[in-house]
Image 1 (spheres, rainbow, N blue to C red):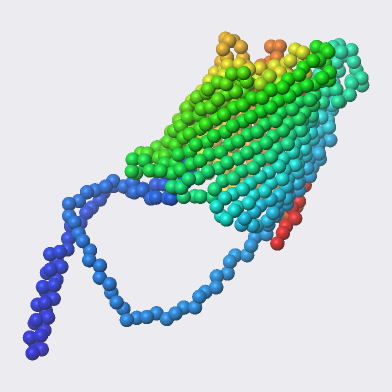
Image 2: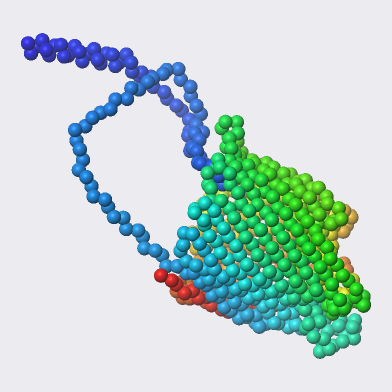
Length: 576
């Protein structure tokens, strides 16, 4: 009986093995080739991450099926007590920052910053900064300037869905129209330096700005996202100059599928800028104004509306940014609103295992040159300056080459067609030749630039780069004023054991064409800064500018100081 049972069992097992052999495929597939998992570099898009297999697909003809079978075990593991996980101790926070310094030419420096500490829902704080100089130039008298600002800011996250933010900012700025010598003053106006006061040629600007914004915290790309902002700005300045600006801006975006495989994000950005101007200086103007009596009064309003729809997506290894910018220009000529249209297309490609990134773009836009923008570019501009909007069309090629983990190079070439490009020229209404007026002209500009950077674990950073500029105006042989032909910059940063920090940079700025056929000489300069960190709360610094001691000119008749040194300290009070 035992032999019969044993023979029967062996026969049954043989039948089962034979059946499995008939139903099991023994084909083997040998795939030859290289496989490199790659995550393409791209702009951040708002949809869930998906891994795409880029390996070549090999089709086969055989099929197979799997019949799952649950295995039951009689083993029952013993219960384990819940473990208590100890979190890392909270790092010490530094919510405040104080920076104080004093330099030659009586140049004080102060910067105070304070903000709230850890909070998942809200952040708020204040910043106060001041920088001024009370120096005197030989033959030019005082060339003082000053800048003081106060900012209050806050942010609140509502129910993890909405982010609300706001800030209030006040800025006071003043400078002198000091661009005349003692001899020029005596010959032109018959006065000595003691016969005039600083208030006769001092310009003061006050700017109040309020910003508020809201955006949703939705990160799912297949749901609607939005962002909305409002900015109110009011500038009041010397000689009864006032500019009020209301800016409304925002965007909406939504992720979607293209061609069943390509995922993209569509954006619509919109902006409206409204300005109201008033200018009534009466009989008071800066020193040297010749037309008298003065009867200038101006009031008006101007508007700009912009729309920028575009789509970002990747296809066949290319990153596409495709859209356009359009809008209505009621700023250049307030009496006639003009429709504007500009392309907004950029294509990028990664090569050589993402070591080389190439991009080509055709873009454009238009920007308002309002009073606040103009005086920040040239602080010696006339009050109530002439305003227009600059239009530009840009064809750009850019290359970024990551040579190694520590070495990276960039190169760019850009051809720009500009209409109403902004520069400045001396205003003939001022006898001392020390006040500028805006000059608008059409220009074709070619810019070629490159830079290379070496970074060694944050201890050493070296940078070198430069640009070449070629401008061609509508009139042959006329060079744009105050535009250099080229510039070079080299810098080095050294961090020694987080105790000593060194910064050194050298600058070269090519010759520029000034007023009255004057050629401003090449500008060269060396700047340096040294900081010693005594501990995490206290450090000392020495800042040195224009160590070449060159009396350079960036604007005609406005020489610079030869060298500036500021010695100071920073202090931070830690919190638990």
